[in-house]
Image (cartoon, one colour):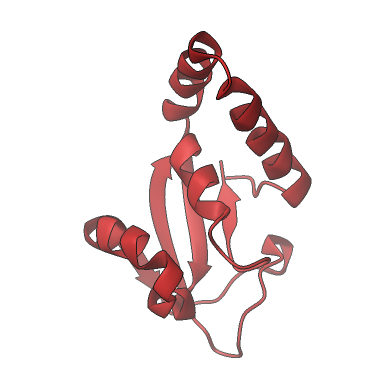
Length: 110
């Protein structure tokens, strides 16, 4: 799986924001993005982040916890020895959740 860069994600966010202004555009984009699989990965410390609590409760049953850290190419800021949590989502859900994380604290793979 390929990690999306911040620029790629911002381009996708722009497409979401633009399509939200027109129901037909939104439906088309939603159909496209909801059928693409993505994995959202983040440091274990984010599980305790209060602003993400709703996501964590929703993902509880499908979250994978790993004791290994991130790859250097993921460009995620972590604490030493901090493990990783990952959840499989459709692309639109991963993009929307990505925006709630602090900068450089998660990565989307497609």
